[in-house]
Amino acid sequence: MAAPTAPVTLAELTAARELLARAASAGIDTPTAADELAAVRDLHALHRLADALYTRQVATADASRAARSEGHDMSDVIAELETDSARECQVAVMRARGIAAVPKLLRAYAAGEINRTNLDQAEYTLSYLRSRLSAPAFASATTEVIDEARRLTPAFFKRRARQIRLRHDEEAARKHRANAAAAAQQAHEQRRLKVTTAGPALSISGQGSAQAAEAILAALNRRARIIRAKQINAGQQVTPLCARLFDALLALCTEDNAHYPTAASLLGAKVAPDARPDEMRELVLCADTTPFDLGRSARLADIRLRTLVLARDGGCLYPGCTEHRELCEIAHLVSWARGGETNLSNLAALCPHHHWVTEHEAYDPFHYSAIALPGGIPAIIPPLRIDPTQTPLIHERFDKHRRSLPPPLKDAG
Ligand SMILES: [Zn+2]
Image (cartoon, rainbow, N blue to C red; front, side):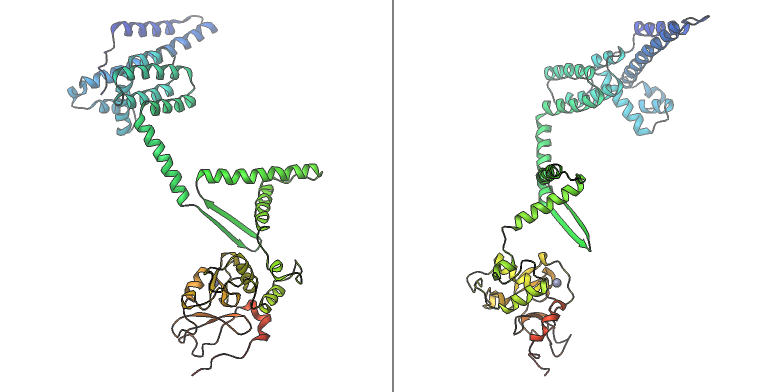
């Protein structure tokens, strides 16, 4: 609810007229540079004064419903004067009402103490606070807002005005904090990291809370700075920041992995640390029982069994599947529910999709299933409708190791 506004007085119109007369007559015959500048200053003061008077007059005429005499609203009158849209004209009337309701604000603007951007921001802030504050609290907020509008540039005043609104409006401040917390919580719940590879191209993308992003960037930046210092101290050329951030990520990942066993370390000293995947596969196939077997003591494979299974299978064992090995699950071939043991010989790597596809008893007539062939090679058994002989399907990664395969286990019919 806006306070009543005062109509423009004769004294104010006289002041405006005097400014105009002085500017217009400045050195009419032989204008000097000083005369021209004096005219600029007078016209600028007139411009301000006229704008202030116009704003107040719009508010006054709107309050008295003067436009009704022409069968209009006040915004229709403005629409005749301006080329703005109907909505913009309505906003202009509301703005005039808001500004005229705070005479102190309008006077400061007319006197050239507040710029137009801050005037609008102050009007918005005071209109916002008027309905939320008691009269004395609103009076003190008004003083503060006008003082800050005088003092600050628009960008700073905008921020300051927002702080004032939040400080004076506990409910809005609470809502603001709750919104920020909810947004952070939502960002956290939707967190994800996607890593894809295609040949040498690596793509990492993700989303999460700002707090998590901060922590990740801080860790990478710390590491990148250490890399830079090492390069400088070694007299090397400093690599670009983007390359150092990549190296930092790699360093963090490989340092973490130092805590985990490798298949080579688990299988003992006879394996060279740089053994080829094929050699590792052969070694794990030979070690069909290991001291790491868990039997029925644990349902899930531990990190050592997982390492050995991945070294043997090299990824999802479903023929043709190229899902990355690190995204594979370690599946029981004879399921845990049917008494299967958590042993190397009863475990195989399957991507989540193929794990789901093959989760059936061995040689299920209607579904795919997974078994271990004698010799340790895991295989897929197709359903009868795909292959009436249900011949085991072996991933091409095991091609070199087929020599140890026995003849088919099950004949058709
Ligand atoms: Zn797969």
